[in-house]
Length: 510
Image (cartoon, rainbow, N blue to C red; front, side, top):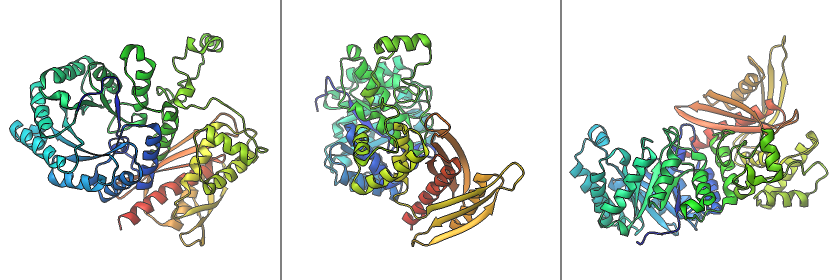
């Protein structure tokens, strides 16, 4: 396979490596929703999961392979026969299936983890790629911990797996150990010293333990790599992965330097970022490059003066290029259905009639409480409505009594699985604790609250408050989010969202 000279292939592993971030578990419908957004983003490859890791992951990969048709759909497999067979069963209905086989290569991993010799690993790598090749021609191979592997051994492995049928060879900086110049030299060495490298695309997969994942990836691209494995918002194991939006916008903004391009629809970046943040519960820090809340804000008077006169003075990118809305207070309680639908389209939302009606009703309720409704408010409303679609229990109403000399008391009403109304009341150390105690008396699922975070969506005393919580049950973490102008109600919604995820997972496990 000839290498692409002017295009960098974007391999998105948000649904596989990204989901491995602690507390970031997604269910199958959520994975499918992200995969569809990645398709709109126009990524080349979606690594949908690790099929053998669990029945739930297998079903999610299978669902994505069946429903998302444009990108290559990739399933990860260890260099084990069962993994490869399972991966193929999950992705075989994809329009463009890929099996990604990996096996450790560093002496550290071979000695302490695999307890195998270099010769054994070399033989296994080639044998398992050949096995995968019987299912599909699109095979990728990764020598795990490549950045801590002797280069000469990497060359041997790559030569063997390309001979066995791999058409993409991925070089992982698995533990985020590499420095850009040395990683670039490794890529250059591979391109010069692996005799059959012209038959494969050279890929890189960098972790951010030293904060160098994007820098290492871009240096590898500069030295000849033509696929980058990355995730939305840079989420992933430990400190995360190379951030997709940073890779793509660096290449786009500095085409004068890289002389390369990607096929990413950058207008969809912001929406993808918000969706992944919403579903995983990982908040994007304000100073995050490209999509952070402060990425296009200017506090300094000198900067403000320059941007007003000519944006290019202090903005190297137009925020609209990455899909960040630029409008502010444009809708209110007098806005009609048509105006709301048009504005949703501007923000990149396309809802069916049922979802639109729910969103419009929620918008009207919000508009009665707020003087003006911002784009961020609307995004929060849409996200809140999507959270309530597949509930086991629905929050009906909350009533609180508290004060500096009173005992916090909460009365809660839920709508149960059969449509019945269930109500109870409880005392607590504070209003939120009282609400959670009342909910627990009704739902009765043992769990422990491990994280509780509150933030304001927009400025002002009437701003929507968003609550993020994490609960743990039987060693598994479940994330919940809720939004409302009343922070106690938002807290209740977040807890119900987490509980419903827990109940759905228990039901899926039988």
